Length: 237
Image (cartoon, rainbow, N blue to C red):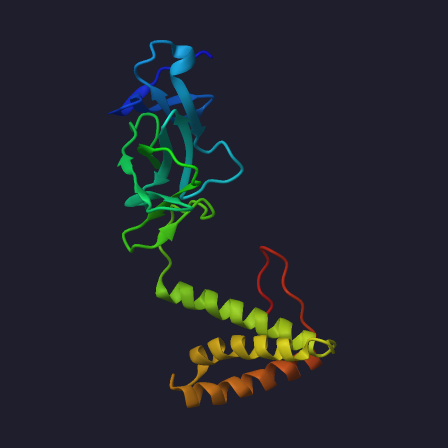
């Protein structure tokens, strides 16, 4: 294959040869990958790479791996939010990775990660941690915005609790088979809402408010049946 100009970010020597962490630009994307440094043939020295922003969504961490004889080379990228990363395996301890800055002329949002270690049959997954020691994997979409404030989080909790309790209240008016489950779910949502609305947060005060909220929303559902809002629309208050 024709190879673009590669930037060698790191190199390590093992009993199976020398391995490199590389980065390059191709097809308007930044690529991070691995290569052999001692093969001498561009057709065979390239081991693999992954492209940033080449999929349908961006993740906080993204990783891949390749194997050469008894050596496994794991490579990937993490956002600026991630301060440390490791390869978690099905068996055995996790393998720490090195986080390596990418040249700003080819990439500003991500940094490269890699680890070279003895190969095994265990499957590996890249896990990252932020400065609060919160874990991220490839299911976490990339979010480069500011961390939500406590007020914004409370508003989100309220919206979820209100929408959920309205849904369960409406379902209770027609459901016969799963009433007990619906009542339990409704009481759980009402408890969170009661913490936000009660005059105190002690259990007795919250439980009293929860009961009133359950009754309030059931009566509201009788007077005005409610359905969940469409995605992206304003919540029906």
